[in-house]
Image (tube, rainbow, N blue to C red; front, side):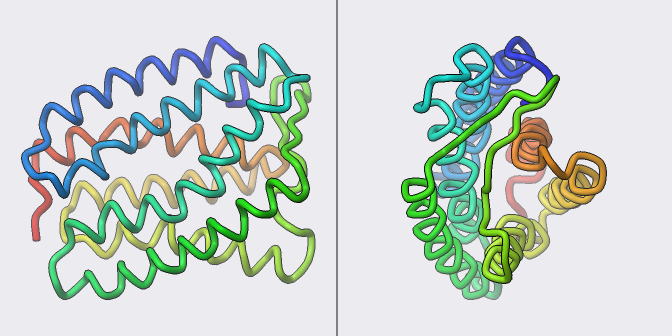
Length: 207
């Protein structure tokens, strides 16, 4: 994330512990996708720590952006679609389909345009995450829809609280750290994912 390699690796280590706790409180197979979110964020944060250490290496930015642009648009709606009540499954399945299409488009964009990361002071800047035109705005809008709206379709108050935190962190990051949005929002979302075990344990995914 945007401060240092040690901060990124600390976040990765903390989320790894969180992931173990999340898996330990799972009671249904359908909950494993949601429980895996901290583990995936741990890998992503570790990859950004490696970007700090080896800024000339082209592999680590690809790993970070693979999670940011290709994994989360489909993983978030899927994690809720498999546990949602029947009344909400249809909407979440549509969001999951949208996320899959978006992931394919963004994944192709990564490999066509390349993954480029630059260390700028105490920040990491990823070049051209989206096209700088109307298409880019549309893609960014779809990304926000498929990664934020699913939280608010669940009856579980803890999941909705996580959704509010994700949405607020998105707004604050865009206003104050627009240039480093990709790096910073992923970090705040990773921190928020530490509440996944509490969500699984305390509310048992209320239908």
